[in-house]
Structures are given as C-alpha cells and as structure tokens.
Length: 215
Image (cartoon, rainbow, N blue to C red):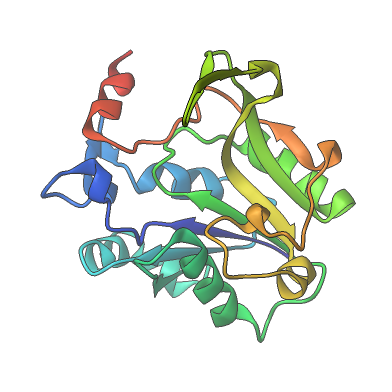
C-alpha cells in the first residue's frame, strides 16, 4: 500500500497572518486543495491522511466530506510541535493496517505545485531503496558566518523539498524524535535515495512567498 500524509497542522508563525495559511486563496481555490487534489488524481496513492489544526479542521472536513465518507481521505488532529510529531501521530493512527513494506509519502501542505511525476519517482525509489528524499540543486553562493565568514562550496549543497518517502519498517527501526525524518543518525541516506524535485515545488513560508504565485 502507498499512503500519503499531508501536513497542515503547523501554527504558521512565520507566515504572520490572521488567516490560517492553508485557507488562503490561490487563484480559484484554497492552498490546501492543491496537494490533496494532486494526490487524489494519482492512481498509485491508496489513502491520504491530512493532519490539521483547530483553525482549519472544520473547513477541510466539510470541503472533502465525500472523500472522507469513502475513507479515501482521513483527517486527524496533528501536532503543533513539529512536522515529525505530526507524521508520527499519523503513522501511529494507522499502525493497525500498515505492513512493513508499505510506502509512506510525506508532503508539506504548503507546497501547492507538487506534481505526480515527483511523487511517483519518490514511491519508486522508496520501493527499491527503502526511502527517498527530494532535493534541488543550489545555485546561490553560501556564506557560513560564525567567528569568521567562510564561503561553502555550493556544488555540495542541495535544498531539501518534499515528498520524503520511506517504508513503514524504516520508520519503526529508526529514531522518530527528530524534526526531519532523514536527520536521524540511525538512517543514513546516500545518492541512491535522492530524487530531483523542481524549483516550482517551492514552499509558502512567509507572506512574501505569495508574490511568487503571480510570476
């Protein structure tokens, strides 16, 4: 089974808006609909778990009531501590139906332009190599500032995106307390676990990022 966890349970403190970030309008729809609808159109995804918070739970429940009725989508209360806490909560919610080689695909809900080509690549690499992480090449100069300023070789720097995918058995075997699954010292990624994403798959973190939608 391939199941997706879409994360909408954060506080969005960096977004600095009175409106929950997931409920902002993008063109003719809401931010939360973009990644969810992409997953609904992917024949390789059998179940979608959406983690929500107090601000968006009722609205998202109402919007997807048909899909919730068929169990294609299930909505649960996430955690405002970290994305990994929400992922852990979703997996524990599903532990009675998960098998060791099932693929769990985690997505940031605030990446509206994720596409199924990237999602399917992530599933394929996870099936073959247990886990997959999405990255893009960094083209900016990187300056490390500590007691002294030092340039870092940008050819060795990649920016991490989602989806991040893994087999259920890997989650059970590794340390689950980290903010990011792949930061766990008990699971080491190599080049074979990498897939290349897209610069269009950007994350809406601040209000300024909304300007990118107009480009």
